[in-house]
Amino acid sequence: MDATILPGPGAKARPPRARVEGERHSIQSVDRALFLLETIAEAGGETTLTDLANRTGLNISTCHHLLATLIQRGFVTKVTGRRLYALGARILYLGHTCLQVDLPRRAQPYLEAVNRATGETVHLAAMQGDDIVTLAVREARHAVRVETAKVGKLEAPHAQSIGKAILAWLPEDEMRRILSPNLKRFTEHTITEMPALLESLRNVRRTGYAMDREEFLPGVICIGAAIRDQAGAVVGSISASTPMMRATDEHIALVRDEVTAAARTLSAEFGAPGSQAIIERQQAVAN
Image (cartoon, rainbow, N blue to C red; front, side, top):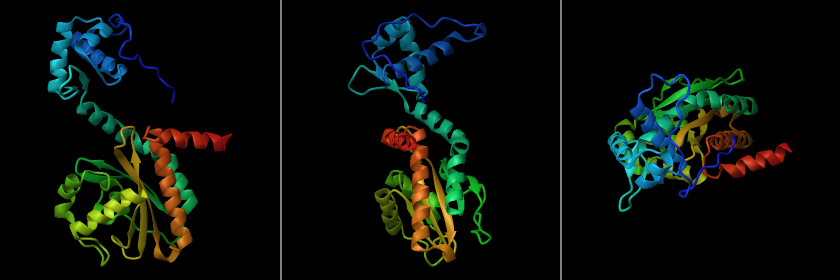
């Protein structure tokens, strides 16, 4: 990804963006509102009304009215106790949704790499509303394989590593709200008590990966890891499932290492915190 140098708070004013061919039918107020959002982003994510007017070349009254609408819609917010305007949570929501739409395409080579290295069934999932949804599956290369759910809503996120890998990074009250009515037992190993499940999810955060040992399907072990974005938020997860007949310590370690490496590298593509170090290590290995 090419680096972009952004102007700092003291950047010189620029004239209003020139109209280009094909914009004859654009709506001026919409164009200006989007211009304001771009300018706030270029200013580092927050700026004053005066600086915003200077940067855009729009008068302060116009900026103020446009900002009021953007605030009402959640695209801009006023910083409490300071005379600053910042990008709002709605921007993060749209960006997060955009990443999820692009996730299956971006994840495809990583799913295939885990599938080749382990020979096991590999899944990709993401959170959509309160549901965790399987977006893609790569079937195992072995004759004896795990029979898992196909693309669609996850039946038991509390009992499957691909669900736990996502749930573990949600705020605890959000975990409780999503999980409380759904702690169904599938095997004798399924965790159905909330305190024990929350401790299990805390362990996922400590280790960096989730595991279920026959919690959803008898005779099946699954390992999953979260995919993060530039804000550190979880956009999805990758998991691999193996039958107990192949679940030696060595094979489980291989599956764990491949899944977590794929999730880390894909997270680096999405700009996750700390990802620059991963990219630099990869470049060093390549050279």
